[in-house]
Length: 160
Image (cartoon, rainbow, N blue to C red; front, side):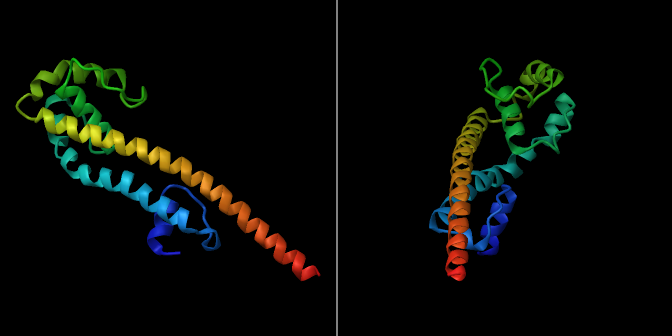
Protein backbone atom coordinates (compact mmCIF):
# COMPACT_ATOMS: atom_id res chain seq x y z
CA UNK A 1 0.00 0.00 0.00
CA UNK A 2 1.44 3.38 -0.96
CA UNK A 3 1.95 6.12 1.62
CA UNK A 4 -0.45 8.40 -0.30
CA UNK A 5 -3.20 5.78 -0.29
CA UNK A 6 -2.62 5.10 3.39
CA UNK A 7 -2.63 8.82 4.24
CA UNK A 8 -5.92 9.55 2.47
CA UNK A 9 -7.60 6.48 3.95
CA UNK A 10 -6.44 7.44 7.43
CA UNK A 11 -7.53 11.05 6.87
CA UNK A 12 -11.06 9.78 6.23
CA UNK A 13 -10.93 7.33 9.17
CA UNK A 14 -10.74 4.13 7.15
CA UNK A 15 -8.81 1.30 8.77
CA UNK A 16 -7.57 -0.62 5.75
CA UNK A 17 -4.89 -3.28 6.06
CA UNK A 18 -2.55 -3.78 3.07
CA UNK A 19 -4.10 -7.18 2.32
CA UNK A 20 -7.52 -5.53 1.93
CA UNK A 21 -6.44 -3.16 -0.84
CA UNK A 22 -7.93 -3.91 -4.24
CA UNK A 23 -8.40 -1.96 -7.47
CA UNK A 24 -11.80 -0.61 -6.42
CA UNK A 25 -10.44 0.74 -3.13
CA UNK A 26 -7.49 2.37 -4.91
CA UNK A 27 -9.74 3.93 -7.56
CA UNK A 28 -12.35 5.13 -5.06
CA UNK A 29 -9.62 6.54 -2.85
CA UNK A 30 -8.22 8.51 -5.78
CA UNK A 31 -11.68 9.84 -6.69
CA UNK A 32 -12.30 10.73 -3.05
CA UNK A 33 -9.09 12.74 -3.03
CA UNK A 34 -9.74 14.39 -6.39
CA UNK A 35 -13.40 15.26 -5.85
CA UNK A 36 -13.10 16.49 -2.30
CA UNK A 37 -9.68 17.25 -0.99
CA UNK A 38 -8.18 18.81 -4.11
CA UNK A 39 -11.16 21.11 -4.74
CA UNK A 40 -11.07 22.35 -1.14
CA UNK A 41 -7.32 22.90 -1.36
CA UNK A 42 -7.74 24.70 -4.69
CA UNK A 43 -10.05 27.32 -3.16
CA UNK A 44 -8.86 27.48 0.42
CA UNK A 45 -6.19 30.15 -0.06
CA UNK A 46 -8.31 32.49 -2.16
CA UNK A 47 -11.26 32.21 0.21
CA UNK A 48 -9.07 32.82 3.24
CA UNK A 49 -7.90 36.03 1.58
CA UNK A 50 -11.30 37.38 2.59
CA UNK A 51 -10.50 36.81 6.30
CA UNK A 52 -9.37 40.41 6.74
CA UNK A 53 -12.52 41.80 5.06
CA UNK A 54 -14.73 39.57 7.20
CA UNK A 55 -12.93 40.80 10.31
CA UNK A 56 -12.86 44.46 9.31
CA UNK A 57 -16.45 44.72 8.11
CA UNK A 58 -18.36 42.20 10.23
CA UNK A 59 -15.98 41.42 13.08
CA UNK A 60 -15.71 37.72 12.13
CA UNK A 61 -12.53 35.89 13.02
CA UNK A 62 -12.80 33.44 10.13
CA UNK A 63 -9.23 32.13 10.23
CA UNK A 64 -10.46 28.90 11.85
CA UNK A 65 -13.45 28.54 9.52
CA UNK A 66 -13.26 25.72 7.02
CA UNK A 67 -13.37 26.45 3.31
CA UNK A 68 -17.05 25.56 2.98
CA UNK A 69 -18.09 27.93 5.79
CA UNK A 70 -16.21 30.85 4.24
CA UNK A 71 -17.63 30.06 0.78
CA UNK A 72 -21.14 29.89 2.22
CA UNK A 73 -20.74 33.18 4.07
CA UNK A 74 -19.39 34.85 0.93
CA UNK A 75 -22.26 33.45 -1.17
CA UNK A 76 -24.77 34.80 1.38
CA UNK A 77 -23.02 38.17 1.32
CA UNK A 78 -22.86 38.30 -2.50
CA UNK A 79 -26.49 37.23 -2.92
CA UNK A 80 -28.34 38.42 0.21
CA UNK A 81 -31.77 37.92 -1.36
CA UNK A 82 -31.12 34.26 -2.24
CA UNK A 83 -31.66 31.41 0.16
CA UNK A 84 -28.32 29.63 0.49
CA UNK A 85 -28.61 26.07 1.79
CA UNK A 86 -26.30 25.23 4.67
CA UNK A 87 -26.35 23.04 7.77
CA UNK A 88 -28.10 24.87 10.63
CA UNK A 89 -25.08 24.45 12.90
CA UNK A 90 -22.73 26.14 10.41
CA UNK A 91 -23.52 29.67 11.64
CA UNK A 92 -24.75 31.06 14.92
CA UNK A 93 -27.82 33.30 14.89
CA UNK A 94 -25.54 36.29 15.52
CA UNK A 95 -23.35 35.38 12.54
CA UNK A 96 -26.38 35.00 10.24
CA UNK A 97 -27.79 38.32 11.39
CA UNK A 98 -24.45 40.08 10.85
CA UNK A 99 -24.03 38.53 7.39
CA UNK A 100 -27.44 39.84 6.32
CA UNK A 101 -26.94 43.24 7.91
CA UNK A 102 -23.44 43.80 6.50
CA UNK A 103 -23.87 42.28 3.01
CA UNK A 104 -24.04 45.63 1.21
CA UNK A 105 -20.77 46.74 2.84
CA UNK A 106 -18.91 44.10 0.81
CA UNK A 107 -20.11 45.28 -2.63
CA UNK A 108 -16.75 46.70 -3.70
CA UNK A 109 -14.80 43.85 -2.09
CA UNK A 110 -16.14 40.80 -3.94
CA UNK A 111 -16.88 39.61 -7.45
CA UNK A 112 -20.30 38.01 -7.21
CA UNK A 113 -19.91 35.70 -10.20
CA UNK A 114 -16.63 34.29 -8.84
CA UNK A 115 -18.12 33.76 -5.40
CA UNK A 116 -21.07 31.87 -6.89
CA UNK A 117 -18.79 29.76 -9.07
CA UNK A 118 -16.51 28.76 -6.18
CA UNK A 119 -19.47 28.04 -3.90
CA UNK A 120 -21.15 25.79 -6.48
CA UNK A 121 -17.90 23.93 -7.16
CA UNK A 122 -17.41 23.30 -3.44
CA UNK A 123 -21.01 22.12 -3.03
CA UNK A 124 -20.59 19.67 -5.94
CA UNK A 125 -17.28 18.46 -4.51
CA UNK A 126 -18.87 17.95 -1.09
CA UNK A 127 -21.69 15.87 -2.58
CA UNK A 128 -19.25 13.79 -4.63
CA UNK A 129 -17.08 13.28 -1.59
CA UNK A 130 -20.06 12.08 0.46
CA UNK A 131 -20.93 9.57 -2.27
CA UNK A 132 -17.32 8.34 -2.47
CA UNK A 133 -17.08 8.02 1.33
CA UNK A 134 -20.25 5.91 1.34
CA UNK A 135 -18.87 3.75 -1.46
CA UNK A 136 -15.54 3.41 0.37
CA UNK A 137 -17.33 2.24 3.53
CA UNK A 138 -19.01 -0.46 1.48
CA UNK A 139 -15.76 -1.49 -0.21
CA UNK A 140 -13.90 -1.63 3.11
CA UNK A 141 -16.64 -3.80 4.65
CA UNK A 142 -16.47 -6.13 1.64
CA UNK A 143 -12.68 -6.29 1.79
CA UNK A 144 -12.78 -6.98 5.53
CA UNK A 145 -15.13 -9.90 4.94
CA UNK A 146 -12.99 -11.23 2.07
CA UNK A 147 -9.81 -11.06 4.15
CA UNK A 148 -11.62 -12.81 7.02
CA UNK A 149 -12.87 -15.57 4.69
CA UNK A 150 -9.39 -16.04 3.24
CA UNK A 151 -7.88 -16.26 6.73
CA UNK A 152 -10.50 -18.84 7.75
CA UNK A 153 -9.77 -20.94 4.65
CA UNK A 154 -6.06 -20.87 5.46
CA UNK A 155 -6.75 -21.96 9.03
CA UNK A 156 -8.99 -24.79 7.83
CA UNK A 157 -6.35 -25.92 5.32
CA UNK A 158 -3.69 -25.82 8.03
CA UNK A 159 -5.90 -27.97 10.29
CA UNK A 160 -6.30 -30.56 7.53
